[in-house]
Image (cartoon, rainbow, N blue to C red; front, side):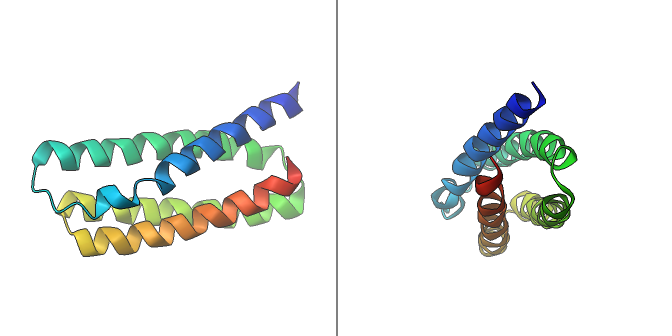
Length: 118
């Protein structure tokens, strides 16, 4: 049953990754609307919460080598997502794009690390 749970977590991680990676155009929108910025921030917060919970479960059930790799990647991802949140709060489109690119790169590395094991 534990393997089935890990597969479900990996599936949700893939879904969140896909959703986050498809948000790039949203961050280039030069809209100066309070509601728009708040919706983007909440969407990223929601996805990162799911990622945190599912990555925690996958990491705890992984082999030691994969565990170390995923832990390092997850720490980097959440640092970039936190920086992205700060950039969105300050409404800095250039900074948000940089933070988003960094987070997207790490997210792709996480996906590449997860695929062979699950």
